[in-house]
Amino acid sequence: MNNEKRIMVTGASGFLGKALVETLLHEKGGEIIAVCRTDAHCRTWQHHPHLHTVSADLSVEKEIQTLMADTRPEIIFHLAAVARLGDGEQHPEKAIKTNLLGSMGLLQQAAKYGTKKFLFTSSDLARAAKSTVGISKLLMENYLRLFPKPLPQVISFRMPNLYGFPGSVMDIFARQIAKNQDLTITDERMARRFIHREEAVSYLFYLLEKGENHQIYSVKQEPLFIKDLALQMIADSGKNLQLRVIGARPGEKLFQASYADTEAADTGYGHLALLRLPPPSIEQIFACIQQLPVSREWQALLQNRFQQLF
Image 1 (tube, helix red, strand yellow):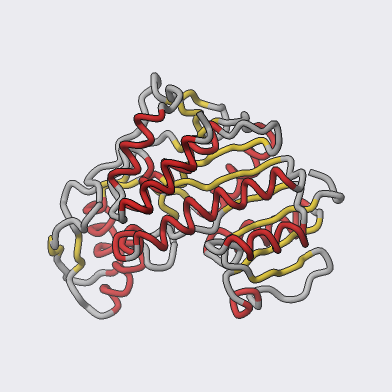
Image 2 (tube, one colour):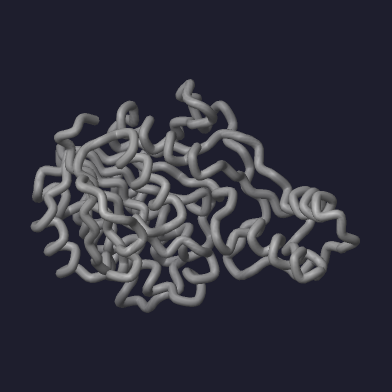
């Protein structure tokens, strides 16, 4: 990147978005366009000569069109999403409008205005997806893989859980410990992959420079058992607290297994790996769409969007 680049970050006021914008401002240069859901979220940052904040609802097509016509970025880091599993299960249409239809609309406008690179943050939930958020992320990954236009180049990164994410399991445990409550876990076998926010930012920068067009990347490392995390936090607190099993939530997977060497090729950069996935078929995509808990009209709309790519 050089100081002439115009870089957009959607979801800029989120936990990862803030770190990405701050790093861009202090280390990478260029003109940074921070896209937030509301004007209040845009007030996250103090004035900076190279920072422009814009409020836009990326689930609304007209707002996407206005945003892109006004800003015309050369690079897009697309972080905005309905990311929490529970939110997706409670509001599936909202998740699809944001994660899938909104992302499709942003990509189409990026192609119209000459954006060169489009980096999409997917989720570990996309692997063997069973939740609304996971399926919507998987479908968008496939849409990017099939996107026929030469520009922008499109790259997906399956984001693991982030240490310190507000509302994360560690945040919940910390609040329970502070109140001298027993820690609640969904299942003793539950395991997840975690990385630090700064590590995630570094992976995104690597993919901007080295990522291959139409490819999906993930983190290749062993998951952490949530039970072990809880017990360690109890030990660190010095309190006499117990674990209480409450059962998995709807759409929640028990175990996020690491990728085998046959599934993911090491990039040589940290734990980042290039996934070895067969090309998606229209039958597989339609099967995913039919798993979504939405009306047949919504499913038909999504099927039509994908049918245009084949």
